[in-house]
Amino acid sequence: MRAEPTRYGPAGSPRSERWRIERLTEANPLWGSNGIAFGPDGRLHVAQYVAGRISAVDLDSGDVEVVVDLDGPVQSPDDLAFGADGSMYITDLTPGRVWRRAPDGSFTLVTDEVAVPNGIACVGDRVFVNEMRPGGRVLEVTPGAEPVVLADGLAMGNAMQLGPDGCLYYPHMLTGEVHRVPLGGGAPELVAEDVHAPVAVRFDQGGVLTVLSRGAEGIVTRIDLFGTGDRAVVPGEVSGMDNAAFDAENRMFVSSFAAGGIAELAPDGRAREVVPAGLVGPFGVAVHRSGTVFTGDNYRLASLAEGEVSTRELLVFSHGVAADDHGRVHLTSQFGDVRSYQPEDRVLTTRARELSRPTGVAARADGSLVVAETGAGRVVAIAEDDVLTVLAEGLDSPVDVAVDEQDRCYVTDERRGTVSLVGADGTSVVAAGLDAPQGIAVLDGELFVVETGRRRLLAIDPATGAQRVEAQDLAVGLPPGTARPQPELFNCGLPGVPVPFAGVAAGADSSLYVSANGEGSVLHLRR
Image (cartoon, rainbow, N blue to C red; front, top):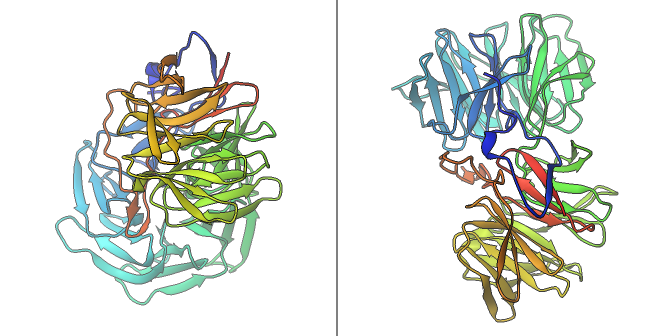
């Protein structure tokens, strides 16, 4: 079954009588890519953590088929492996579960007693997982039995594999090391140190240890452990790698947590695209004074130009985005931070920490920032000296903010269905009765709001509250008729799955940009 060009299918066809709408980027055919493994059918199966589903890729054609969709029990699949009987075992990271999917498609909970389960390996009918947390463990898990601890003290475990010597090999992401432990347990042994940002440990068909880097440089480290002992370090063309799988011909296929897609990575680092990379969100969107369009794409700050998506920086957990007149780009992370970034010299400054789910951000003329602190029901300002001031509180679910030419601030409240003006004495409602309003921007004296509940873009007169529908059938939020519980934002104190939101931004040419986060694209609206 060939994948739809967008996960929305025919429902994701935006239309407008006032605007010409085109996709600035193509819809993402593979919604993120994390753990990968070859299944009994020969296809490469891909765990899609943010998307909450699992797909299978035909490597000859590039066709993608969803095999575990949003209506299943798995919330945030991060890695997978196949047992001897063809069952698929899945680490469901955020709720802390390990699942077995039988060949007939039925699910069994293997265990829910693993914290932040990530890497997984099958050895015959035995299943092993590790934990992606400081002080994590390697465990053997069996349905109906207590997990058996093989090793502990992991500094953030991740993708692991059985080596030719019968030991499990796994990375310590925080310390740049690779360790191994016998299947029966025992003292872990340090195998390699000073490995660049190790995220996945794999063995090729010749038994050479291959370690992927999660960094922007796409580094692959190869160590001939059972031969010469030589180490080779090669930079590659895939940024933010997550996992790898070798086929029978020893071709290495890699996934990218940052951009999704699947690529074949040659020994010299060159990449051949199998499934195109794309946007994992997108969430906030902003137009830089240079004309470059930026978007917060969860694991990176992405830039968009001429139909191409580029990773400007691997700024992990980038959500809300705003640009100011001084050339800076400001970002929020729903996990608590507000940061400012200088694209020219690539300097990043943290402006605030430990906020409660900050989402939308806007820049004032004086250089200060206005932030919708969704989890706290507040709108706050951050001055140039990083002093934080509360502008409004007692809101239900403020999602995005916008500032007009007079520096007046407007905020959307998703649960209340309102757009409000933030004044010195609190907020006053400008428009009510909206269905889950999220992104907001100011253009030519009007407010433009993404009404995600009705999948529309509205224009609102800030003086009268009069509304006008500007565009309909936007691919924002989940596809119609789809239900999926929102995974937790935090898990064991570590970042979980972000809450998606659809941003909107105005360009200097009076065009608009909308985050079509239901399909992984950005829409460009021109009059």
